Length: 273
Image (cartoon, rainbow, N blue to C red; front, side, top):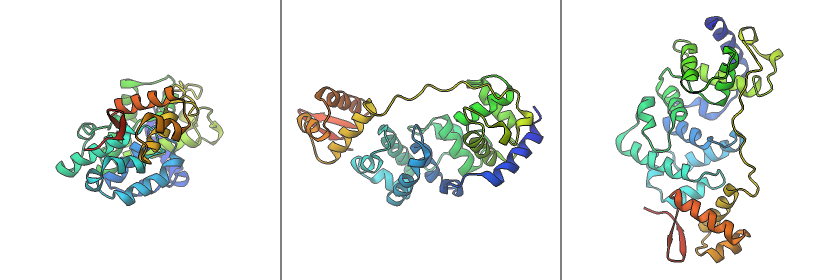
């Protein structure tokens, strides 16, 4: 697969074209975990100010674990998928008590931590030599190989391609290449590794996310903000959000199923300990 030559060309390109993010300059597993959870299904441009605010309020896992769930959700509000915040708090509680797992397997045992997030923390914070496979990696590696890859085949290919001792830079380089050059419509003229690409037309796009306007995500966010502002009953939530009663009821049911809110008679509230 012309691995050494391609790796050298890609890493040389990365040193000049890498994107600069503050979380790339830290080995703190907490900061890395927070950004990886925040960036799940959220555009990276929206994450930076929220990441900085989060670490300012909760600089350690213990600070987050000790906070009231309502405070955690209030700081998270606007990022969507609010159960991510509660799972992050639950993970923080385990880490504060038991310390950090230092491997992908150990990190995956934490609430809300999947294979990608576990690999990112294990690689960047603890130096484990593992690939961090996201959408960009899947697209780039599939084109290099010349066929759409997923699952075990993708993991095996990504692992085989890792340059010895350079997993962190390699993972970031693949991500930046996929974001800047090898996108859904590849710019092969600017690609530093086009010589070793089997088929730049290979791309199986992931399912498109539904529009935010009018979605369940929009309704859940509006209802949660109203609850955080002090509303408690459904009629008040309808007035505060301007949503139809059916959408408010559906949002509350979804938030309740996710463990974000609870009902006591006719009153709703944010979950507590």
